[in-house]
Image 1 (cartoon, rainbow, N blue to C red):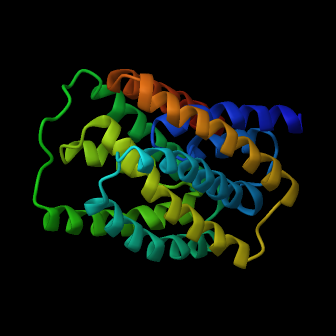
Image 2 (image 1 turned 30 degrees about the horizontal axis):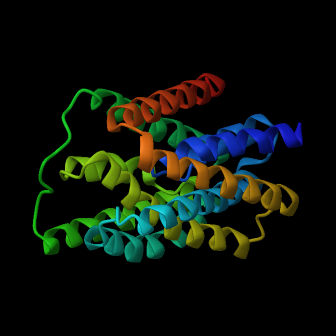
Image 3 (image 1 turned 90 degrees about the vertical axis):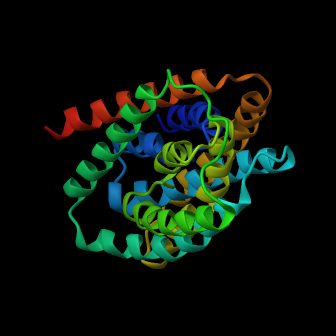
Length: 249
């Protein structure tokens, strides 16, 4: 069953790298279903895999000049401050509450993306560079706290919010991939500091996501239509949210 889990993570990293996400919102519930403890193992490894998936994809997007750094860098800076705070707070909240927060967050993101599949791609990004930097800084701190708290990189919120600011789908996904790396890594380090890890799962899963995300990022840049990305994103998220909520009832 261990290697079946690793194979699933490989396939999922392929999908989520195309969406500009780290994939922890799917990695995490799957690891829970395989019997791993949510606080001690799932959250920190989810953050690690999230960061590796996003970093591998972001490198491809950077080389193709798809990342908007005017909003990405403020998000990176403030999310790095918020993630360790979120990681610390996990010690103060029950596992059941964390799972409910996680499920509702994924449900919201999936519904938002499905509802936006019929909208046309924006022609102009809203605001000046300064305004986008301010919005990015405010967004980043909240995303960082969520990343450390729930073991996810926050890309499921960054992508739709950037699209609301007028970013095309592919630019939003590429920019999100870049920002997710940093909130994931700082959150992961926060968990390591309090002794949360499983080395065997960590190493094998890390290798799987690096391979899967490299392939997925290249396919997204060359072949994937924005509407198709939205449909895949929303459908996967709604399925996962439904499964998690059902198990909690």
